[in-house]
Length: 311
Ligand code: MN
Ligand code: MN
Image 1 (tube, rainbow, N blue to C red):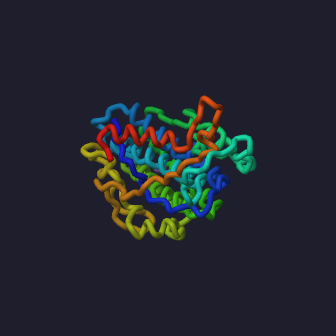
Image 2 (image 1 turned 180 degrees about the vertical axis):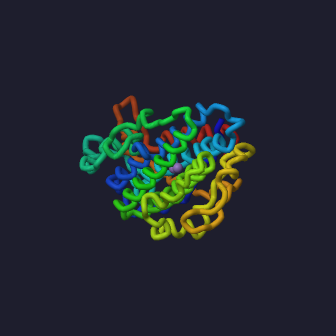
Image 3 (image 1 turned 90 degrees about the horizontal axis):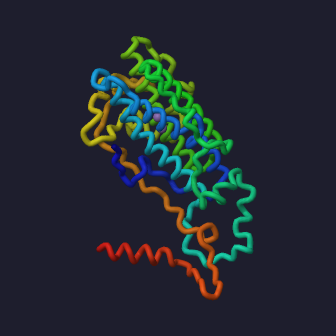
């Protein structure tokens, strides 16, 4: 089962401007073949299908535990997209909008108009082509060596795509997201390399860094490496997945530092709140007998919140 903490794994900066085009580039990290939906669903189903868990416990623990971190990465990518759609200032309660005035006309040129038609606006579970994420992206073979090799390949491809999305963006929120995910993807990539090495004796770490960009040359990554975040494997469980340290040990191939498993959760940060969007939500209307007032939904929410003993 899963627990949930109502925080992002990483504190995102405020976006400089509303930028739906930038948001659409980040979609590859959500619903792309090498995006966070893919890493999540690959490890989740590999852990569900895992046979002989007791005998192979360090490998099971590693895959099952990273699953939980990937779910938080999906959340973080979504927060980034939503933040880029909302812009720097949460929208205050607006005056009612007249729907006949084409209040959404400015979104016609957006790369993904569907953000505003279906999403309200919000993240879509699709890649940068607008193609929905598919279960065809999951590889779960029942062969542990093959699955680990696939996972190493998946994390390597994911890092390549993160780097390219990073290179495509100037907005701090998109760049910070890529920097953080490059570091965390690096941890997973190295963890699967270490797992393969321990299982087969082959030195997969010799292929690193893959892609061949020293991570510390990226400023957003360097700041995180100075905090040791590239060395930590977070244990996302109060009492389980205790054997990961049998794989995640020794040195980090980038800088020779010692890697470690920690029970501390990432410090994290608050998810941005895009605020209310009158035009996309419920335009004011008055048909004589039916009248929707601005703020009515919030009033109802406040009432039931107070009824349950809150102030
Ligand atoms: Mn990830
Ligand atoms: Mn990963």
